Image 1 (cartoon, helix red, strand yellow):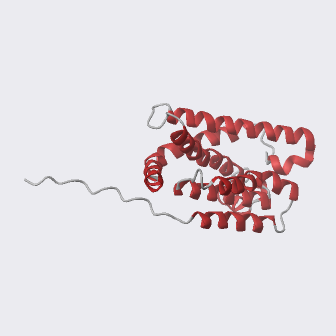
Image 2: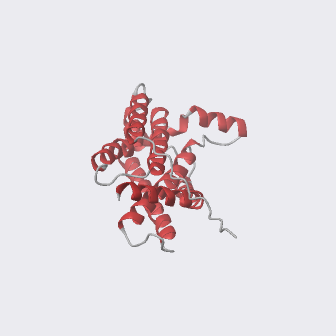
Image 3: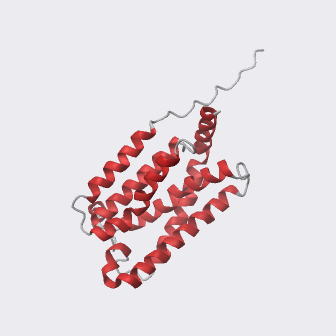
Length: 216
């Protein structure tokens, strides 16, 4: 009897990195045009403003997987929308609030969910490629811990902005009167990071293998 071998896994389709960079650049430019508050726009999008040139400068030495590029692009667009309107006034969030009878615009919660979902793949990729943790049982829990640490640092930056700007920082904080907003933000980042690892680890591994094969 002839043995039947399973078909090899198809390599992930490669998207030109310049396309991701172009989408982010256009998204940031559009969001800056007519932004409701320039200072808030800058504070909300500074991660994308700093991250895009950093990725471009390091690309030859350290290219990223297509999956991570796509996620970073999506996250940058989420930041751009939040920066343009301010998180508490994003129209789609108002629609969700009114449709489902919520007490607040939930776009800020979504933004912090993304703050865990996307960095989880970023941290996982960095650890998998630059440390002995690839394939280790410690990779997932340490990735979640790193995402929580980043979320906590962001909340400390928000506290600093509130101390410096007073009521002028309300648009950046987007607390909408919730005294537990900081705790909710970190909880959303935790949920996002765990969901990301549960849903994307297998796909991410395929992208990592494809990247390694191209660079071999």
